[in-house]
Image (spheres, rainbow, N blue to C red):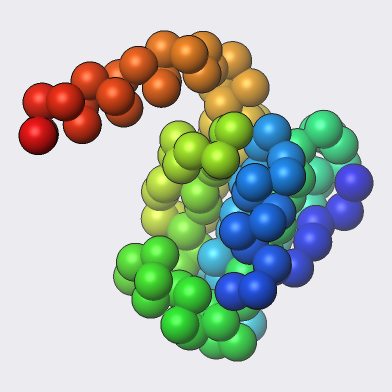
Length: 123
């Protein structure tokens, strides 16, 4: 599956409708983004069960600001609508593969329990 482009209008529904969504926040002028692009594209071919999406931070400045993207490239991973990974910097292929496999391997019941527990503690 090739990468897809997300906008402020499509990101929420894409995250909601798919089990795993990886989002690459990038810009045309960003050298590290250009180097990470082919790695991300290769991952999308390797993992057709995972949505690989890109957000152009120049075209979607309000979205990037809302999601607090301060450095690009930034990779976010969502599983079952929950943000489970957020890291700035271009990843080499083995590290991206490790992230994809870790997200696939998450026990989401455990993740939801931890979120609920942290909400209870802060209340």
